[in-house]
Length: 117
View: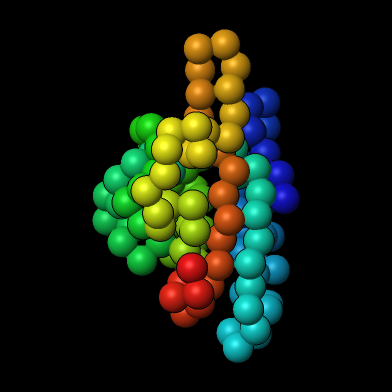
């Protein structure tokens, strides 16, 4: 999946997250749910209160897009798999442009399947 980013209104972004939440919550809880996408947000390198969602091994600083990802994950009982393990920086970075580097692509799973990771 690909989340809306710069150039999209906050209303469009809100609709995206609401519709994605509806889709995720429509999948029965007893089914495994794993998905990946370019979420266009930065969850940062610290849990900052998102302990069931964020594993404390992210990259960089959190931004408003990252907060949207984390809030979505909490609402849907998901864990961001990328943040569960310590990795070398070149394995964390998913986008580079000039001197800028960031991590914006994430794998998410249901919290109750976290032990599979």
